[in-house]
Image (cartoon, rainbow, N blue to C red; front, top):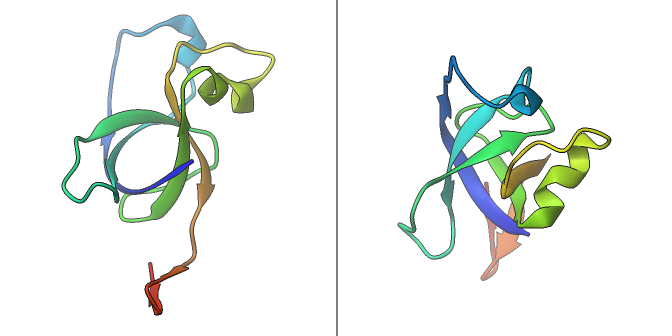
Length: 90
C-alpha cells in the first residue's frame, strides 16, 4: 500500500468494457517526493485533492470482484490524516 494525492481525472471515450462505470484518477505518490504520476481505478469514490492509499499489481483488481478490470493500480481508501515525524499530515 502507498499514499498518494489525487491530482486529476482521466476521461476515455473508448476503453475496455470492464472499465465502464469505473472512475480513472491521476495520482501523485507521496514517496518518493515528486515521483512519477500514475492512473488508478477508483473503488471508493475519491476526488481531486484528496489523499488516498492505493495498491499495485494483481491485487488492484480485487475490489471490483467478480469483474476483472485490466488494471495494475487501484485506490482502496481515503485518508483523513496521518502522523509522520511527530507531525500530523493530510
